[in-house]
Structures are given as structure tokens and as C-alpha cells.
Length: 145
Image (cartoon, rainbow, N blue to C red):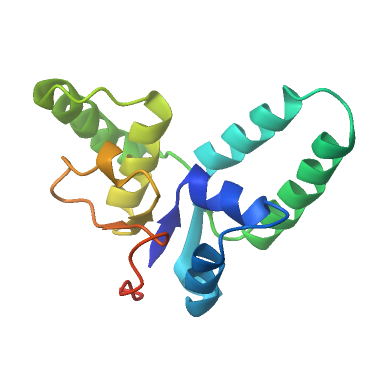
């Protein structure tokens, strides 16, 4: 089972997404794909910052589709995940690998729920030994766990 990072969701929302990502997503049963609430917040805040116009309206429509698709599979940063978050933030500092709060929260949600993290930014997370990573831009071998 998989947790989708912002770059995967953003790719999915594009008018002309990378076909490797779409093929990878289509190959997974929908019930195996999860969406972190942190990514929902990132999407909504990013769209809110755009000037009014066709691009913003198109992204709002795409976001509504994605958010509706994942309405029952949106995972929060709950109390249990905050323990994983603290561990990940400390590992990041010890390893000398700066990590955004959002990335640490997403990794914590994936870790706490035993989900592989699907991301293009594998290098941002590869120091976390217990986190399984999948890059649909490159890794066509990934299958549901």
C-alpha cells in the first residue's frame, strides 16, 4: 500500500501528466493508494496563492477531483504519527539532511501506517532506513505491498 507525495499528486493534476506516473497509478488498486492530509493542505495553499484566472480555475477543478477521490483515504498526522515525526526530525538533524516540516510529516504518516512513500524526490527521504520509497518516474517494478 502507498502514500502519495505532493509531486505525484501534482503530476496527476497536470493537463498533460507524465505517462509513466499515470500508468503506475492506474496499475495500483485504488484501495492501496492513500493521500496525506498534509498534501491536501499543500495543494490548497498553493492554489490559493495563484492569481485568479484560467490556470487557477483549472487547478481548483483538478484538486476537487483528487480530494474527492481520496475522501475516504486521506490520512492525518495523528498522535501516533507524531512519535514517528519526532524520530524522523531527529534522524534528519543527526544525518545532516535538512528536511521540511511537511516532508517529515508525510514520512511520519507513511511510516506509522506501514505505507511505501511514492515520490519523485527519493533523495529527500533515502536516509530513512525504515521507509520504503517508490519513484513512479523510474521504478516500474513497484507493486502493492
